[in-house]
Image 1 (spheres, rainbow over the protein chains, first blue to last red):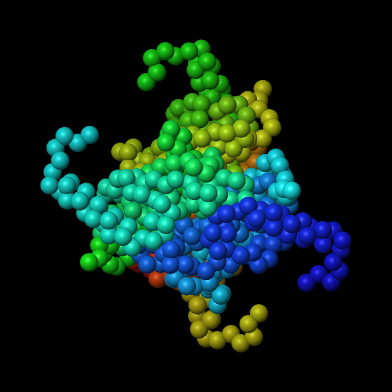
Image 2 (image 1 turned 90 degrees about the vertical axis):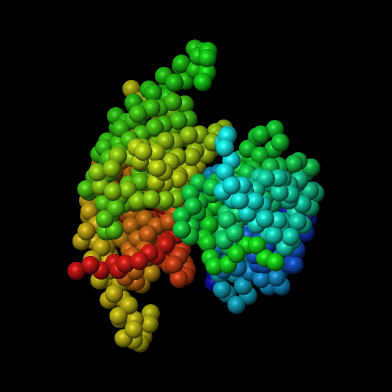
Length: 150
Length: 150
Length: 150
Length: 150
């Protein structure tokens, strides 16, 4: 825990939150999936989603696509937290345990490394009891433009 | 092109289609996304999805999660085409070009290798003009149980 | 098969070969592993390596690191074939079958997509009978500088 | 730090070390690369390697194949620490910074999840100052047989 929060820290945190708020407003895919933003900080995001009936696949568990959507969204909010438009370049996901309908899932994305244009982010999806259901790694690529739009 | 289709080929194709039909009936995630099955054969699936307004993210393009959902579904129908319940173990996706709202996307998944329990499948997502938007690779793991349920 | 090879094609092929020759001369890792270049064209490379006794691991098969080294080298010669210094950003490898000491392996890398700075390349490692031992996918990143050095 | 080491802990640790010693003795690839084992525990391995002149590629940095070899070896010793023969199924590597000739590298592999047959392991490659040069993720597959051989 940092004892002395400097003005710079506050500004970076506020910027990250403003980026998230601006993106979320126009992020219909994420709204529609019922994903909510818990915490967004520079290079970090923690999100929640409940597995709905309409996210269940033919094996009667949450479709891997929705686990990916959740992890990829955490990654997106983490890597767009500097107000530079940043895309996912490639992602890997490892499915460990299945999620059932009705379960609440938590995704946490953290920056491993951020270079001039490219970055690497790790994310996990967990149940509320902390059990990890999936490991995710994403590579980001920063392009021109700012995240925050009037 | 095979000239002589044997009874075995026909049966394998019919089995693949019966697996797909059985899975699709209970695959709410895939139905809800508007994904339709064009062709399912042993180790192969070709699917379609139109990018809807509610699949668009904060950068105003189709959320990577929905591109993944489509590719992962093609993979799932390809690797479950032998009537053995088979899960995705891990997947990679490379995003090449963004998809816009209203565009029709085609996913094709093909088997690279299928061993006793594990398999490797490649999938692509393309526009109808053939331009590839994403490359996907999935690793499958066969468990107990049959895909076709009464 | 192209019927009419234009001057541009020839120059691109010659450039690719000159890049490969220049890189190979200072590529001690590749020389030391006994890797030889069969064909290098724009966005394409075909290489060979024999599994030596000193490439075998504790399970008595070729160490996955040497399979990766071979595939990664094919990728490197394919993506550096335009005389722009290009690095590997990330790579995936799927091991299908083990290679034994004494076996000759062939690696083929092909370009899936090449953008302004980034690219995606697929490679396979096969035995001479065509059996595929590993699937590889690499992402490239072009930096400043030219491959060919005086 | 555990205060009370139980007999079970000691046995698991001793078994892991005996597996490593047995594998290393016949692991010519790893010996030849000058890789040394610092710590091997259940699901964990820490290794060292110095970048030699003959590991340098045509861009005058350590060939990615040798970074992979090091990370993959840490993964192998971590996942074979239970005396069950375990193979790498697939691996991903993200290259962050290049390594130069003469540098000493440290690889640490840790278990994310180990199921009945399959497992997921994360590894990093760092310089001695702690700077991470590469992130690695490996998927393991346990087959029949024991690691320790008389």
